[in-house]
Amino acid sequence: MTGLLAWLVPLALGMGLVGLLAFLWSMKSGQLEDLDGAAERVLHQANDAPLPATERHRKTEVEEIRERKWE
Image 1 (cartoon, rainbow, N blue to C red):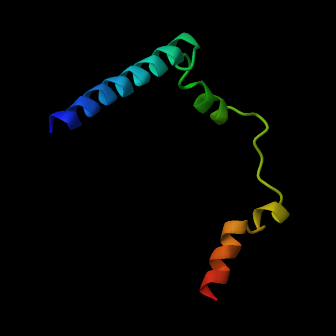
Image 2 (cartoon, rainbow, N blue to C red; image 1 turned 90 degrees about the horizontal axis):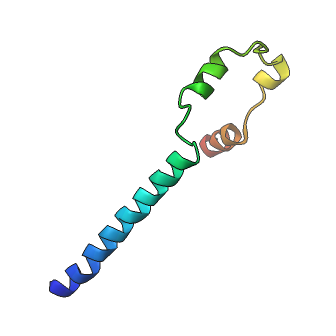
Image 3 (cartoon, one colour; image 1 turned 180 degrees about the vertical axis):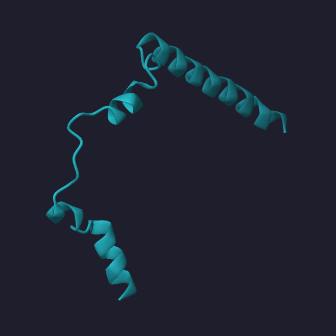
């Protein structure tokens, strides 16, 4: 039991350190600066138009596989 804890405690501490370093890197590089910007830009796009009829009714590869599965 002691041998197992000798491996698990340093492993858990190392994983925590890696997570902390990843968080600090994301803060330093600006990854968390503008969380709502992309969501707001999607709502305010001026060139938003419906797809042409040919693209609306085109089946995706996943839909074709599902249909073949049930035939």
